[in-house]
Image (tube, rainbow, N blue to C red):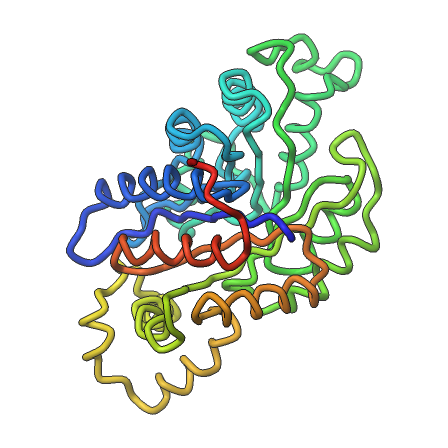
Length: 338
């Protein structure tokens, strides 16, 4: 059976604080560590009232310290916001502290709006266009030490010395990152939970075009998807109403906290909103353990994924942890805490 992993955006819930959301992330990580999940990735977002964590590297260190088996990583570091040297230093440091347990997932987007992105980079010289490829190349050069003769960076030692960068993954929601991941030989994670591009096409293309490199000998394709599980299909659909209403609001540019189940149940949906929710069903996998297991197996087979990574948006945190537990049980992961 394919490995199951967790993607956590540290969503803020209505009636709670961002600090509560960070504590919820720690509790969930400890929970799934015992359930047998493979990875736990943290996202980077800025200036969004709905997302509490703008610094995944800090959360990675804390979660790795509070768990024993999980691989912990970024899903991802938004490289345009960071100097590649800083990324190299921070993730080598994490790798030194937690050897063999850290992943470095990289994204092209800023993880925020244009004004906030400008504020994040205001001390840098203004640049026109997309400089992701340049930053990615520089990050790789900090690892290989292959700066050209005479380059001013050639003499800089990246500390802690002697520690490798963690495994690299490029994140994407289109065919661009799939092709780039294949070309340079890194892992690839596709965000099916918000992508409009076909996940199967992107992941199969990545696998076909993959070229072995020092970053990876074989392709590793992760399918990231949204899922909600409960004891019955009906209860899972009920729990998913918070996520559906939150999605409706985000599509209008309203990035507020995840609404409570009571708010989602009593919200006066218009006919067009109900139609939009129906159209978005393919992006949110909902059901009982048996139903969800069948859906995830079908998604994995259709995309030829090597791993499934689940983001579960549920307002009630006990129900959220229960969702991951039911999925683990249906998948046959077993409880490793015993």
